[in-house]
Length: 101
Image 1 (cartoon, one colour):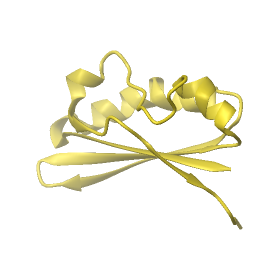
Image 2 (tube, one colour):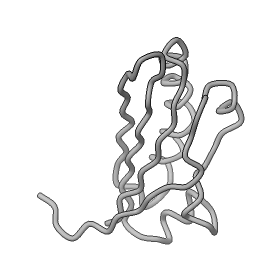
Image 3 (cartoon, helix red, strand yellow):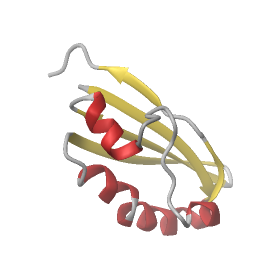
Image 4 (cartoon, one colour):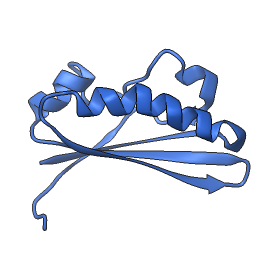
């Protein structure tokens, strides 16, 4: 299994609206892709900004490429992300799971 992570930041006043948007776009995109084994979308407030930390689980690199395209290290964005995000990671991190419980 492979873990994929990404971070983005909104103004705190936009956080709830971005949560709803992510559930319609990113969460649906992740979980409807064959080979996705789960997704966790998390937030934490940091002053006047809210950090979004997305964690997804994948059964293979082929599954990740089915979601992300030929460059799996590049973050996937949706049309209205620019209206919400004040900062974002343009790349993602991947981790190979060697043990789980």
